[in-house]
Image (tube, rainbow, N blue to C red; front, side):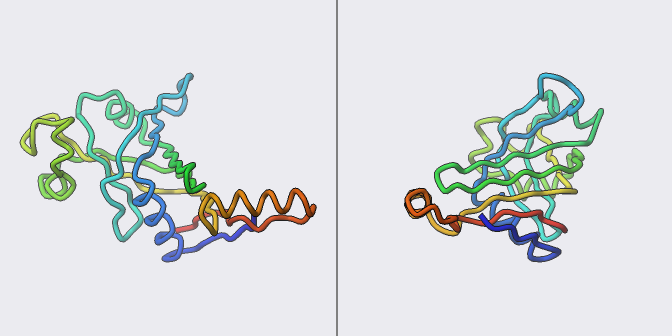
Length: 166
């Protein structure tokens, strides 16, 4: 695996690519508490500034945690394609109607009683530090390269990892 740190627009593009493609993340809030409080969340969008957006219920534990401590860790994992993203940052909660309308879709009806649900909020996550792991090929090619490297004792070039500096 080779290391390639990405900067500015290239870092934002990589973050957007991974977060929107993987789609689901574990959102960890109340970082000082043990055990960690992690909940699965669906990424609704990544904006041009690299902010990640979610829909959430106002009465949820993670909303309450964010109100008390805005520090959040997101962990994206796609083991089938061997792609991973860890992002640390800060989150705020909004009830701005325009944003809620933009993020809301039919799948959101599973959690909310429509766009007018009084519990409906959006979480805007501001990335501060991020690190990614991404294979250059699909899983089967990567596994094949690992097998060849084990036999030949050569180092396998199976992917790239690095910091995302926005």
